[in-house]
Length: 401
Ligand SMILES: [Zn+2]
Image 1 (cartoon, rainbow, N blue to C red):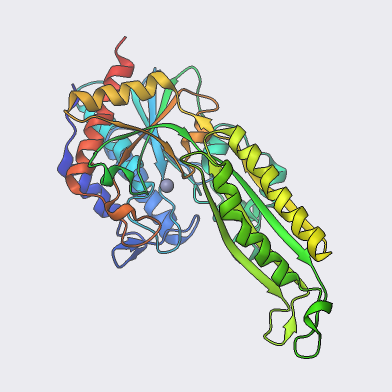
Image 2: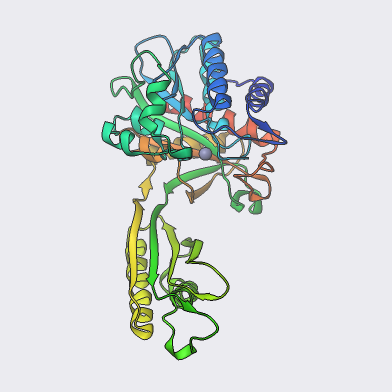
């Protein structure tokens, strides 16, 4: 059995949280100086642990254990959203480092560690894990613009980084494991300390736009208005009830933004746009909700005699985790006296990219108050340490024939 050093893990996590610190959280936007400094620090920590560590042209930090493998790859990301939490991503990376280090101290050379670039999508969601798996084209990098309109390809060129991109090695890597904070309230509410992810939800994201006609809001009779705003609000108001009728128990949906043009008090809106997204692990439910949204839009378009357009702006398929790897984590939790909760992940993770090329599994630890993507994000120290020990035990199970 590998015994992880909980105090060392917590110290590393807190040291990492100093890069880009904002009160109790962090801001480490991809390729920012805080992000790159944190990555350099991480590279040095990996090297000190005995890994062959480097930062690749995309900013992925990869630490390979000496030897030809087989190896389990453990990782996540160290970039954050603005004013994000100190554990989102960082937890899974530091678990990897601690487990690789603890096993090396026992003479076992079988865990590689990775911190992917831009999981959060400041430039491009899953940039690092996608390049790591070889699923990124130069054209995509060229056309992706980040904050301030900078092309992602230019940002990468400017780094003048050396060396080859870090790549998944199918002859070496037998599994990908990612630990993450839950970022939701379910584990805490059930007083459970370990979650095992069965699947990561798929997402359908739409832009719904109504075309009306601007006119004076004081002089145009109600019956003569071509009001794009009122039409859009009518569609939005119908979404919760109609979706609920077709949704599954775990389906979620969100109207996250809405805007009117010209967007002034005394003008009837000429155009109105909103975003609608929904998530589920069941592709049949997602497809059904596509139809419901189209129906609602078409009915309001007819009733108001205004053009309504629904365009799919993003579609991510649900991704199942590997059952054998997931079972290894659940059994490891059991071995530490914890009944694992089998659950879906409502958030995206690098594991959904890796799962397309390797058996992949995820472990969740509870988020206090279910909070994440905010500086108040936190997890109890005991849970952080337990999660790492359980993942280390799972690695043992996976690598022991
Ligand atoms: Zn994350």
